[in-house]
Amino acid sequence: MARPKARMKLGRYLIGDPPWRSLPNGVAVYTERDPEDGRTYSWEEWELLGYEDLDFWVEYDHHSRQVSLYWPARSEPPVDPTRLRLHQQLDLTVDGTPRRWVVREVGAGTIAFLDGAFTYDITTGQQVAYAELSEVGGPHRAVVEKFDDRVIDTYAATTLDVKAQKHHFGRRVAPYDLRKLVVALLVLVVLGLGVLSSCLSPRDCTPRSGQTTTDCRTGYGGGGGGGVGK
Image 1 (tube, rainbow, N blue to C red):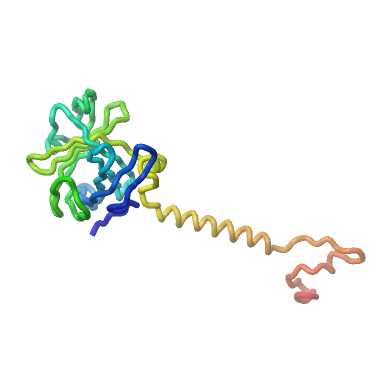
Image 2 (cartoon, rainbow, N blue to C red):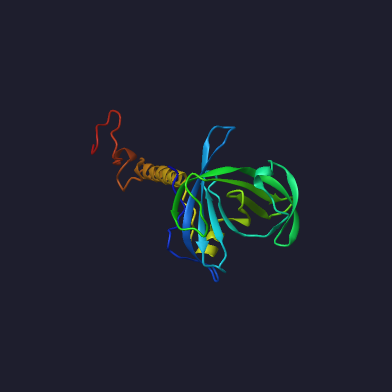
């Protein structure tokens, strides 16, 4: 079963730079099967309470490892994500600003896991249709979600890198990439072995007074001359 992976805990405040202070209230994990490659993808969405009394959400994508912050937005005209298609362009006013958008993703996720409480009713097994929009030639993002025939929500969205995560939440919320940590550890081991090997390798000897180079002790046996200490 898909489970939450982000570094957040229900009921534990996230305190970032002022005025950011929020409380994880509930988490839902979604799954969706890609008909093209046959793989099942998953992501999680955390509802945060506290900041400006708005319905903020944090999404962590289990495949891309991208963290996004969503907040409620007003859109005109109303958009039904089930009627949009990939790469379609449309004119949409979000929070009073008209922009040209392109559909980057469209589909329907199934809620596979729920924990905590939410400000509205969602249930395990429920399907939620969505469309992710990107501004044509600009940085803005928006997400439209449809929970049933009556509830369609629009959210403005932004991607949070590690620096932005610490600014908003006081910590990195994306889990660490264990593959990168293993690679870094292997590199350190290889470098360490290289340094150790160089320290143990034979070195040239400078004879003391009255000695020749054949009198030097190298610690290694030599051909025809006997073993260590000879």
